[in-house]
Amino acid sequence: MSTVLTVPPSLDDTSFESLLQARAALPEGMRVLVDARHTRWSSPYGLVGLLTLAQSFGERAQFIPPEDPNTASYWARSGFFEHAETLYEFTRPVGKSRKGDSNFFLEVTPIAQTEDVQHVVAHIQDRSKAIMETLGFPPSSSMGFSVVMSESCQNIIEHAGGPGWVAVQTYNWEKRLGRRVVVIAVSDAGLGFRQSLGPTRGSTMSRWDDGAALEAAVLRATSRFHDPGRGQGILGIRRYVKKWDAKLSIRSGTARIGIIPSWDDDQALVENLAPFPGAQMQITIPQLLTP
Amino acid sequence: MTPTPMPLDLLTALSRAECDLYSNLVTRATGRAVRGQLETMLREMPGQRMAVLDFSKVGVLDFSCADEIVAQLLLRFGAGLPAPVPAPEYPSYFMFRGLQESHLEALEPVLERHGLALVAESPDGTMQLVGIVEPEEVTAWQLVLASGGGDVDTIASFGGAATLDLHARLVSLARRRLVIATPAGFHPLRHH
Image 1 (cartoon, each protein chain N blue to C red):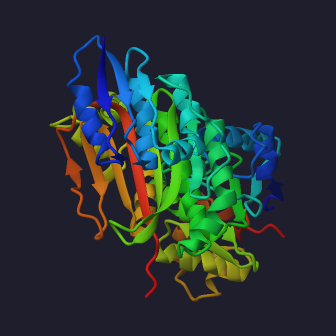
Image 2: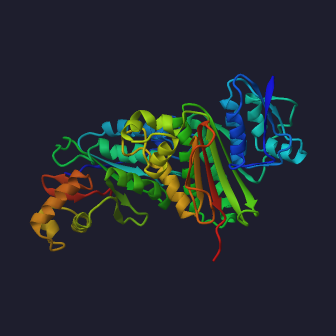
Image 3: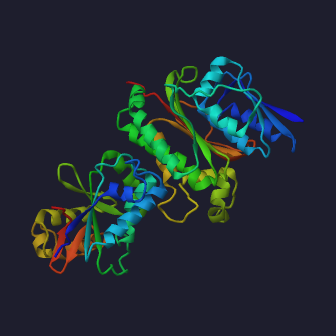
């Protein structure tokens, strides 16, 4: 007997929450069928999120890919199917050709070891300067972008205790912002911030939950290590985000924290979300406005 | 006698650390491996050591590598020791070349977190301090540079600083490995 999780027609960080709410309501022991038949679009966050969702099930879930040929082709080019087939049982075969797509800075890429981060940074570095310049960024911003990528991916290796995924895409966010954006999405199904920081930091806090752990890590650069040199990765990401009027959002467990720019109306801290393992990060960098 | 400057090739260290596919210094694990190689190279130098770390061929430097390589090297070789702790018998000094703006964006916050500073040579050959330094320390350091080094009176004569104050500042700079202390006085870090 299977129970169905329906993927929203448009899958992004907001609509992904409805999927997680449905997941949280699943009766135990039921086999899951993830139904993406009617999905027409997904952000990189949605794609890496679906892979993490698969990792979160005890039993291998089934997956119905999108019916729309353009969507299916796009997901194939993003590399999603190639990795999803190792985690889901597909109900029908899909094309996996990865001819590349100009909108993908970085296709869906697994992060499991240091070499993966090195590879990602080298790949990004080759492409980032040209693409960032088309978004109005000075050439110097591409190095910082590579550093942000490195530190974002390293969180998986240093803290998750298991493999994760990263994808970077640029697209026109006409409806919401009227500008192009670059979106970095990083996701894992590992320990999460509360558990990673808990053994060394939890006992020193009056309240210790997912929200408190995210505040400690993101706002106060707290690390599970007592070395003052640790915890600087997220601090550096925050600086980059502020500098380029970007948005940072990190979800872990049942909470989500954000560094929210003026162009967005998201809340800085959202708690009591549906539980989900690991950590999911999204960085949205908008095209620079010319004065 | 001041130590002979010895270039430490970061890319050689990266290669020895078996990370030679890329010229980027990223990830904490890579930083640890590269620092391990640099420490081995340093230990092969006799007596007082002055290493020149050249970043001119380094692409991306992230915070983790900046911390593991630069901050930890400075700390392990004595630059962060509090005043009551005796300095090592053969202190090591580090000078940094080829640092680009993007490298400094990663380095400066790391140095700040540890309360460290370093001596960097700009592409035009001018020297500067990077990191946490008091204005009085900068003044004293610039006097050492301008005078070319010597005893406290000689250095003081280049700026009219009170000798007693200057001596304390120079001792502090030497403790932080920003100038070299010898029985003959205080000397700037130079590689040529």
